[in-house]
Length: 393
Image (tube, rainbow, N blue to C red):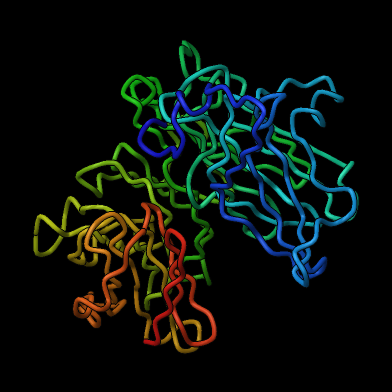
C-alpha cells in the first residue's frame, strides 16, 4: 500500500510525549436518523497513539453520549489485539443497517504488525461492536473511497499482504454481512490468480474501493462489481458470484500507472460509464496529460470493458458526476489536486471539455491528492488546507 497512505512509518512511531495531538484522514459519514457525523481520529497523548471513533451532533458539534469509542480498548476487552500505532485509517466510513463501519489499513511503508480491519459499531449502542480482519499481516483496507454497499451487504478491497506464502486475504474483494460475517465460498470473495506477484511488487488491488454496478441487459440489468488496481487493471466481477481466486468475469489493462483514487459511475445508454483518475492505456487521442479515464461497461452475452474517452488535465483528484435528473446531461468534474489546482468539467458521454479550469483567479491552493468535490445546493465545494472553495457551474 506504499503508494497511497498519508502518514509514514516514522510518523507512526514518533514519541508523542505529554502533548495531545490528533488527525483524521478518512472521510466522515453523516447519519440522518441520529443527526450525527461519525469520524475516526488518531489521537496521541502521554499514553501513546489511540484510534478513537467519535459521534458529533450535527446541531452543535457536541460529542454524543457513549462516544468516542477507543478501538484498541474496545477490542482488547473482547480478547482481540489492535495495534493503534501501526494501524491507519484512510478509507471513507459507511453506515448500513444501523451501524457505522470504519476500515483500517497501515501507514506509508507497510510498517509494523497491521491488518486490514473493519470495525462496526451500533449507532444507538456504541458498546455493541462487530469486527472483521485479514488473516495475514498487511492486507490493509485503505482505498480513499472506503467501503461500498449494494444495500444488503458490504464490499471492501484489501491491499498487499506481507510475507504470505499462501493466500491470506490480501489483494481481494470481499462481501461481508452487516454483522461482518464472511464465508469462504468463492461466491463471496475474489482475488487475482497472480496475487502473490502483486504482493511482491506492491501492486495493491486495494487502491480503489469496489464499485457495485447495475448494467443494462436484455433481461433487465446485470449486477456487477468493478475493481481497479494499482496493477493498472480493471476487474469486472459477477456480484452474485465474485469468483474466488482468478474468477473475474472480465479483466483488462486500462491505465499506464497505478490507480489509487475513488472512481465514479453514471448510466450511459446500453451500459454504464466509470470515471477514474489515471492515464488511460487505450485513450482515443493519446496525450501525456490524459489524467482522467472513462470506461464503458457493457453486459451483453459476456461483460466487457472498453475505454470510452480520456480527459486532459494535471493532478490527482477523484472525479464526481452531476446530472439534471439522475441520468440526463452527465458532467464529470475533477480537480487538479497537487497539479494545476483547477476545476475541470467534461461532457459525460463524449468527453468534450466544458470547463477547462478558467483563468488565474480560479486556481486553488492547498489541494491534496485523492480530493473529491462535493456537489450540493447547485454548487461544487472543494476542501483545501485551511479553506473551502465554492463554484457555481
